[in-house]
Image 1 (cartoon, rainbow, N blue to C red):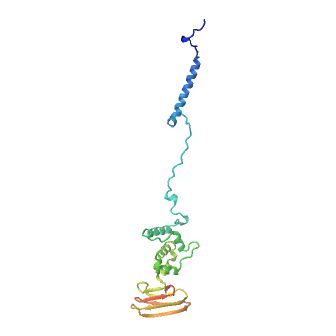
Image 2: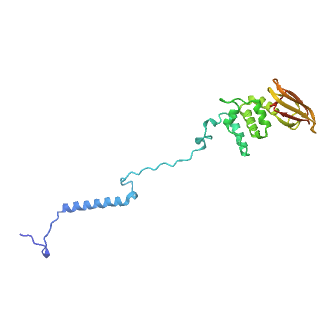
Image 3: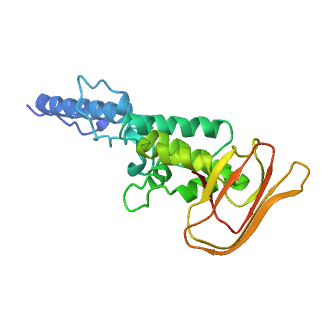
Length: 232
């Protein structure tokens, strides 16, 4: 028996049930994939695989601690003993009151560490009796007392001596007997009363063994081109 055409005169198309099932599955998969793409990183990571691998960001850099950065830019300036640490504290205290005396390496140089020359009495005398060298004098004393105490006797001697200049005995220098500490040439010295009258004086053109002078409290004493005077 012939097929009956559908109403309206059109041609009928038969679709197998299997085909319908396949199309439905394809559409469902397409919808699922679309939902994943559209949801992006907000999808549930427990049920879906990532669509891309995130690029890890650089970890934040924490500032170095004091122990990591070190207390000094130059490793050679780091204190290596209790004496050096005490010296650095003394320098810090001086800096706090406005006196920038120097560094740990400067103190080592004063003490003759490495290739440096050890302290000399002439340098100490000049430092302690030259008004322009007062910070240097304090630096020398701190260095010797903290870093090289074996030179303390030399320090004491240097502080008791004096250089060329005009002084009042008892105020500027102690009464006593003093001697130039090296050969002198063209040296002039003068003792005077409190009123300025000359008590004794001398001009020495050449004294290979130096010159000795005794001065008393209240007197004036003037030295020109004689170098440093040291207590006898």
